Length: 91
Image (cartoon, rainbow, N blue to C red; front, side, top):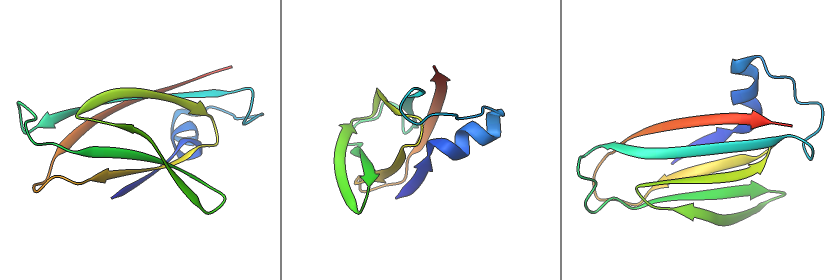
């Protein structure tokens, strides 16, 4: 399990979040190892006020959420994986 917080990504990029509602967070991912990603089982959960909601899954994909999103990436595979993440913000 890896915790991902959009606000941390924004700080790394020097992006100022003035509104969690008016700013959008875009995330894409792709498993790089193993290739091909046979048997890979990744899940992405949104964490909000004590709840945990599955919002995406798969060896590659994309999701869009608010700029103050906190996520968990869970590897349910029987082996380790290397994942490339790309993200952006928009108002």
